[in-house]
Amino acid sequence: MLVFDSLETGPIMTNCYILGDSESKVAAVVDPGGHVGAIRSALERHELECKWIINTHAHFDHVGGNAELKQATGAEIIIHPAEAEALAHLSKHAQLFGLSVEDSPPADRTIEDGEVIEVGSLRLNVLHTPGHSPGGISLVVEGEKKILVGDLIFQGSIGRTDLPGGSFETLKKMADEKILVHSDDTDLYPGHGPSTTVGVEKRTNPFLTGELL
Ligand SMILES: [Zn+2]
Ligand SMILES: [Zn+2]
Image (cartoon, rainbow, N blue to C red; front, side, top):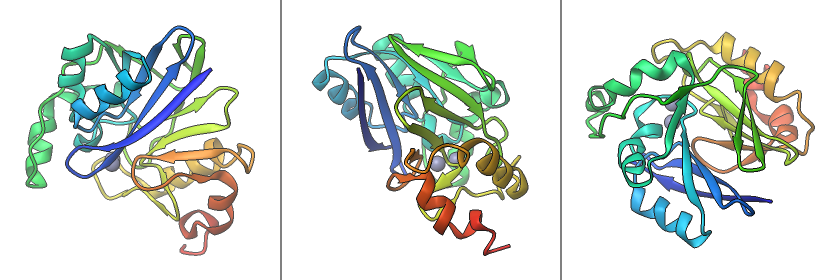
């Protein structure tokens, strides 16, 4: 059974998600932005061992906790190949925003569109969803009607497309072809802010309905 939890972490309160398997007691932590003590307390509360750290993309606010969490747990870092290099330049990137974060250790494994990450009996299907960031991924939790979308889609909004490698056209195409094709009652868990659903965003998100074009 899926154990699902989330907490806001890091310098700009990024959503960090815990996906655990209640039988084998292993978990993946998605986007540890920081506050690794709080992430570890949540893992302990659920009696889960973190074996994988998955980054939806390499912006500093999603990966600032990689180093400390890996050091504490020995977890493998997993990211799309187009984001892997940026892991070494986090501190510089954060400085541009006047913030400080630790560089991440290199990726242990890179994953592409269509691959599956197994977390005990859980299966996370990887979708390559660029637009906000070139190697951005979304994770479909198989059989659960849950998709972690990173900074692709927010409730009523979308991720920035003006950062290096961003593109509104690509983002819109990815949202339309890979996310909004799921059933209306599928929950979407973004990198910032509250969760939403495919149905709500399809009907009311002005960036996705075409209203703002
Ligand atoms: Zn981002
Ligand atoms: Zn973000």
